[in-house]
Amino acid sequence: MILHKYNGCGNDFILMDYEEGIDYHQLASKWCGQDRFDTDGLIVVREQPLTMLYFNKDGSQAPMCGNGIRCFARHVWDKAMVETSPFDVHTLAGVISIEILTEEPFYCTAQMGQPDYSTEKLAVNQTEPIVDQIVCIGQVDVQLTSLFMGTIHTVVFVEDAKAQQMKALGEQICHHPLFSEKTNVNFVQRVNEQELIVRTYERGVGWTLACGTGCCAAYVVARDHGYLASAKAMIHLEQGELMITGETQIQMTGPAVHEWSQKEMSYD
Image 1 (tube, rainbow, N blue to C red):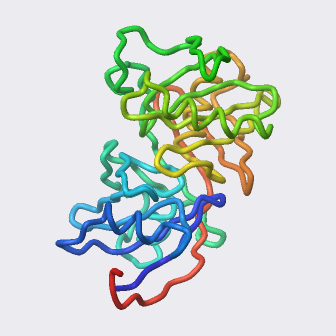
Image 2 (image 1 turned 30 degrees about the horizontal axis):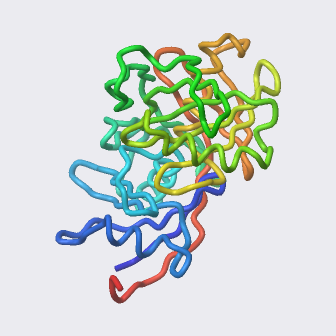
């Protein structure tokens, strides 16, 4: 089999074509760890219909990955698996439309769907939406807003998203009993009416350099709180930026980089 390494704003993945009979949960936990490729996740490309399967580095499967779908898009475009743009990609979060903007450097826009504040999507045991809800985390009261944006996300507004003390807090919120299926946690700093800084603790991964669906979630909550001047924002990450736009339907625009390809002889 041929393995490919991609990254989107530092969020990195191993990508491979689908084969029958493989336990991708186990493969992701084996390959994405520090003793092998040390990546955030495993992306599997399935054709007819064109489908992205995504597995976190701990082996759990996620409905979608924002940075991952841009890497997926670059791969299928470069390999001529699709011939026209825009094109559709099936995911567990629904069908995502991709438009290629430039090939070198590679940029694309993904239609990320609609945000959903319903508690059913969040897998929490309460009927009221989690909007500015105060939750005690390690004897500290933290104000949370949670929504489904391709996957489960929680947004916390802070004065300094880069602060060291956020690291422990992110893991604690992710594993809080309120979230039966855990949650991604996004610390969001408002720079001005057009820009946000986002740092994300990703469930099944840990701290990551970027999270595309997390940036979409941060944008939606900032917009709905009246923190943005218009329906668009530049999101600053540790190794790049994403442009998030939209009102009902959310769009994400950003890069994808191919790092290497290599032949792998076994699944060990």
